[in-house]
Image (cartoon, rainbow, N blue to C red; front, side, top):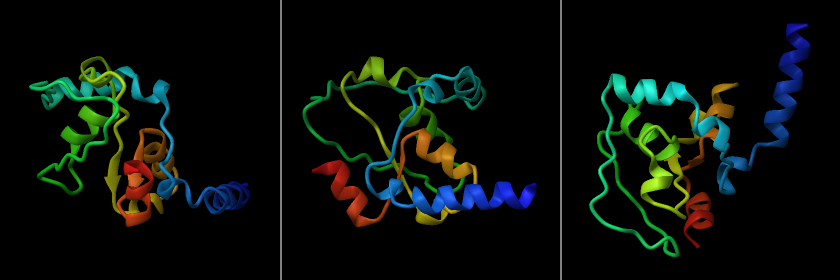
Length: 129
């Protein structure tokens, strides 16, 4: 049974292998889960708006420190825990992460459905142009 599930999921990963370079996908249900507010309050993570942004333009934000523990970037830009869509209506955020993070089964689905994309050049071009 485990082998069958592994084969089915492996097939899905193969069929869906280019989603991370084509702009990905984002699930508003997953972005609005209450667990993200709990994480935001625990660390504590805040999103402070200092300027209005034109939703008809594309923006690139740098985030540091980056690496395995980027809770601030993920919670602020990929969830509604800090009310991103209320503060910046019309702007659809995507977090660019390394390709190998899309190779880990099941966490790959979490990354894709939160709006993560691959950092490689073709993916950046899809999102910016």
